[in-house]
Length: 410
Image (cartoon, rainbow, N blue to C red):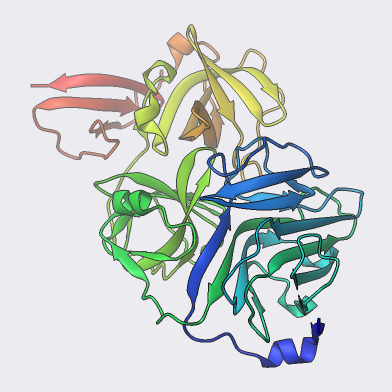
């Protein structure tokens, strides 16, 4: 059998055909992983439909990720993804979609094909140049597509300063016989979530409103749902900004919550509504509040363990997590003190969390005495947290200084 080694120069020169049809997709998550793995030194399998892949030295975080990671802290390792089945069609390209990669710690990335399941004889080797060790689509182009072959992708990793040097989202196996598919468009966030396309970008047609932006986390909403846009964002927004529709992203999941990844086309705000965080108590928070921006006054830190927090307000204790630790510093001397916090309501695999974005020590350490500033201006908000300058009859949240209460105006 003739062995074909595709040189780096030839790989750079070759261009993937404009059109391609995806025949097989290897994806991850609890619905596909055949084992729950929490280390970087195991061999386990993924099943998508009737097709099975073997992964070596990849971690799935006990099925909590919808992606997998390879590369170890303080140890060199080699991660592989291998088809357990020979693909009957002639594959023209294989595309590995990477969420992240620590390029400086990767020795080599290659695709090999073989007519034998044990890869005793290699049919073709395609290597990726180091300059292309980047997040996004990493394309292996086959010089002589042929049917009835097994496929193995290898990530050769040096010793890292942390685990998880490569984050692998999906692998697709494609031929070049189908016309290109245009990026699909949906009306709103709920339709984006329902489509759940983890491979192709989807355009959200309608405008969304900014809930809160912190670091690489942009929380947005429309009339249908709330969602997190995660990743590098070239715009800076304020709560209440309106982001024009027409941007796109790829569906992802983290901690059981849908999110938008690889967002493109986010434009500057086209309008602004003056909003404030919705004032709540810990006891009032429910699953319906996930990704809402809230203010909780008069809480104590009952316990802090690294980034894990137990908040307490009156007799109510509630889980917290310093999700935005690069932007938010937790107090270290919190004994006997109360705080007013602004936060995003988070959820991790069904467990509700208060995730602080601002922490301010209350003027008084006694919860009943909070808000004694009678000279502060009075502000009114509706139950959605939007400030109302001239409240009419109805139920409102009244704030004067740090004193907050619900009032009925008749």
